[in-house]
Length: 242
Image (tube, rainbow, N blue to C red):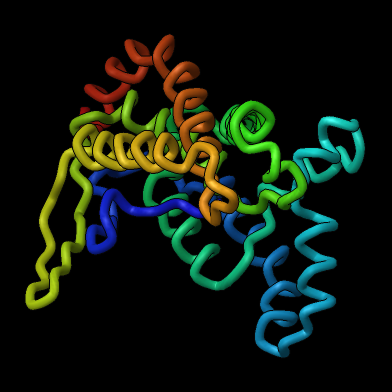
């Protein structure tokens, strides 16, 4: 599962939202993802299909296995496994941009725990949707950090709805950058996840786990809402873009 921008030619570059400390946990998560991707990248560039398939099936989460309570380690490993270079690049871009501020608010330990829980929520909704609407996808491995990162986006938009996101917008003949409020950028992104997710129900194959994104995002919002007033107070002290 890989994060996609609100539309194909609309990508975040950075946010205009300072932090009070270095985002060590976000950086550690990015490093862990890169390390996990190295064997996949090797198999990818060498054309070793057998190794590639073994890695994805061994560390990705297969919904039917989870329902049978098998390979439970993949609940965690699947969040750090990616299918190709573009998959990991786009996911890590979103985590780099939005994760530091959420980590700053929650603290490193709580952020890590919640990051994992958001990933589990994403997996849970994905498996439920597969079970009810797309049983033929129960044997397809789920890989990628985007479910957990969607939780980060959900928390970010609650904590910093007015933060500005420097965004690159490219058309057939134009390219420019502009600043978009987080509530608008992430809101558009979420609407697209819902649209694509609904349109994809029952399709025989889907390369993007939209319902995992939705599950992670909603979990992030639910966690962040009770903390909103606390963050608003800190925003005034730190000069955050509330």
